[in-house]
Length: 191
Image 1 (cartoon, rainbow, N blue to C red):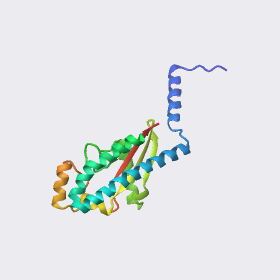
Image 2 (cartoon, rainbow, N blue to C red):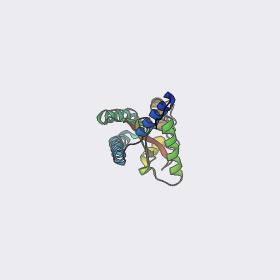
Image 3 (spheres, rainbow, N blue to C red):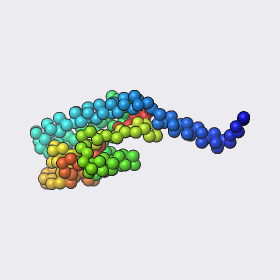
Image 4 (cartoon, helix red, strand yellow):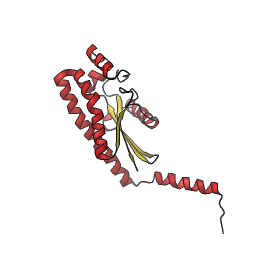
């Protein structure tokens, strides 16, 4: 039997083949990508956190704001160059309105993280990943830890408030309490 197809049916078939191939990575590939992304997040946090602690000890929260505003973007940029991944930090309440605003996919995941946290899940191991638009996307929640509260908490000292206004005039990343989802590391890699 000979089956005749119209150009429209052929296009639909080709699009479906593309979409299926877009999400057909093996479980081993996904496990590898998740492990890579998590290693990058750990390296990022493991590089930034000691710098923030040292800044807090040497000059208090105002000094830590300075370090965070310069060092965090630099760490992300260097890790991105080393790894080939795009790396940013995002939040529903962005501190840096130029670089921390989430896209639609990140917004959806951040809202899911908030729901999971409210339901009792800890941010420590909270992640989400998927393949979308020819990219592997990964997010790791950032929960509020004690070290975060002096600059992201509900009560800020006047010098901290002034430093935040200087470095982040559109800052919305305050008012948090211990354990809440403050934002997330967001990584992506073209497949």
